[in-house]
Length: 228
Ligand SMILES: Nc1ncnc2c1ncn2[C@@H]1O[C@H](COP(=O)(O)OP(=O)(O)O)[C@@H](O)[C@H]1O
Ligand SMILES: [Mg+2]
Image 1 (cartoon, helix red, strand yellow):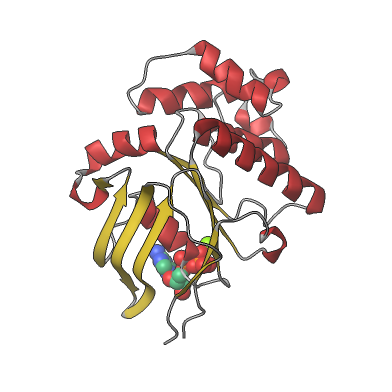
Image 2: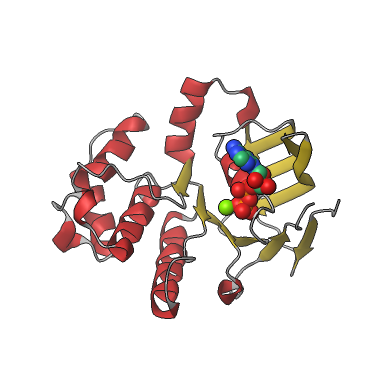
């Protein structure tokens, strides 16, 4: 079985936002993820690279507290997320972790604005129309404020998913294959929006992809190997 290799392009000194220790995940009787030690620092950009089946989505789900690892600990903003019960974890995730899922999981019957309001509500945050307007403006979505999510094009829906991920000013933004379905021009636009929004929030950006087009501008690459 190949080992996960961690290639830091250069060392960083910022405070740690995500810390992984002794992480292992088994599925179907085999180990699909094995990361002895990994730290992501404040406001830096990380690329989780690896072929299909190498465990990228599994890792992001674990970092988001959506999946409990077989072994090891994960801390986000100094909080050991493994110690949180699921209800508390939901609120913690809503406040500290922004997620752009591979399948976007927008609520299709709700308007674009209401998808964002709901993300604040779920995190126990008060309604704030000005924040929703601001994020929609930043992502070029103002004209779609009242559009139903189901009526959006794929590119528009991708931008709404990014808006929803950043609405609560998270400490970390996780994005799973955000560009795999996009052409080069849209890939550049989506990456620029993710960088801009991460910078605005002061968030750490962790992007999982098999898309080697987007290898630039990352602090470090966490390369997951193919496993047999
Ligand atoms: N719930 C699941 N059902 C089926 N296979 C899974 C499940 N969770 C993990 N796996 C397996 O774990 C491995 C890693 O999957 P995944 O994290 O989706 O990789 P990646 O995102 O890099 O393509 C794959 O071999 C996949 O088949
Ligand atoms: Mg995946």
